[in-house]
Length: 240
Image (cartoon, rainbow, N blue to C red):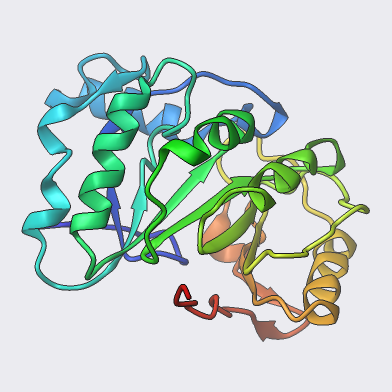
């Protein structure tokens, strides 16, 4: 069975890679690192290396066994485009996503430069969405990299949002997710930062999803923005 996810914008997770390394400020309090250490302590076989990058070849073909169509977050515990993941392994994962056409797959990366570098070597079928993480104004260049890929559905994960994003061009972007940081040490999220992004999405006709205010007590903080729940999803575009 697929591993059901508590992440609000997906249904299940699939981790053919586990572990990662930190490359930007949004990584500071990485939830996946905390979870990987916890799973290692619990004796989980897939996390015997803790948060060290590990290719989990034995789970690559799992989605082919999941017959119920679902939306699947790929590598919630890693980054598919980490510099130490071989292109051949990435292509194996793309091949499985292509074969499992009845699912929608969501790939999210901070390594937008590697994503763009490998773009022409990947089979971008309609059911593969790709997104980049953007935590503040300093990382909007990732959006430009994303824009230049051949993915049919492109999205932004503006989480954790740790500063304002003033230069937000949403040309050829299909979906924007915004969320505050959660867990120990969570950095504050200002309402005006969120409202500014929401307004830009409305102006540019891009679906907007507000995931959470975050903080140490994430559930208590909730996800209402100006008295409303924003759960818009991308329009599923067919090629051609």
